[in-house]
Length: 438
Image 1 (cartoon, rainbow, N blue to C red):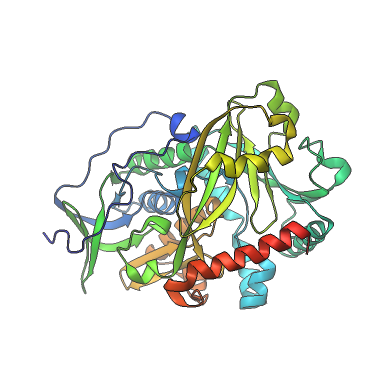
Image 2 (cartoon, rainbow, N blue to C red):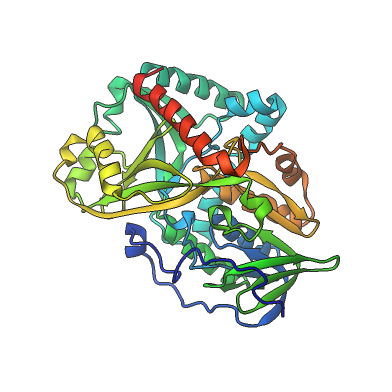
């Protein structure tokens, strides 16, 4: 066995979940072993977040022999820490995609991005996953300029045959959200929200029900490419496989420098209040999830036990702020002043992988090695879609894979050394525009 060829530091310490509301309310999970021997498989998937799990389910449903490796625990990264919102679309709007890559690419993306939410609902139904699945999300406008942007977006989605969205004026907002902060917004009836960690755990169970095998706390330290196989090397074992799929995203951990340099880790933060009881129904009577459309946005929703889960903020480079509550709570109180004296019981942070174009990336590192990453903060649905596309490509249908793989990768200006300061300056400028409605 080739063992520990590179000195790769472990990104997750002991692999324990962060002290989040999600970790405190998980469904029971089995103990899964670490890989400590040399084994063989048809397909090895690196990373047990949503991308890897969606790929694993689709492949095992098709009868493939699949091994999955997770450096910490199932959903330890962004998949188990995020806002839990089923938001249709990518971080980059269809308008931006059309300007950057042409109308043909925008038309193609507009035709497939709705599938991610449908895949989630299918998994939940087919595998009886208990993850507090709820309906409806809302894009909130804080200014008249935001509202004009939403009108443009609404028309563009309609052009792609998507009729699930409805514009809402200021007078109608309080039917859905009891705040004076918004001048209007847009409902998406095909959106929704979930307990993301419990979704990930349920999807892992689904992989195993279909015959797949998952190893947790198994750090990948290197990958060797050979003409007739791939060797995925871990700390204490290895997997010899016909094909490999790399789904490490923000926590790939320098194993593959070519991928590490393509994206930048960015942290975002969430707080969870104490249960609000009847007040929760007064604040969000529709029980939908909300995100505004600023560059540095707020996003929030109610949990199943009626806590306010409120997130936002960004730290480029992926470090955690010293005071998460101090950073996020003022934003929550601007939207809901009545929550000023409500206790915060959980505060956590986590990284997502940001691509410069805000468009996820998919491709091959080798004829036998596929990858997908860079969902840029809108990964709940995108990961599930990309998992399906990756599985289809391995099954021989590369039509959708090729379309995404051909979208040019745009590097961060100045390369890896300048990607953080460049993004900080950009963030400051867009934050300035958000603040003053420019």
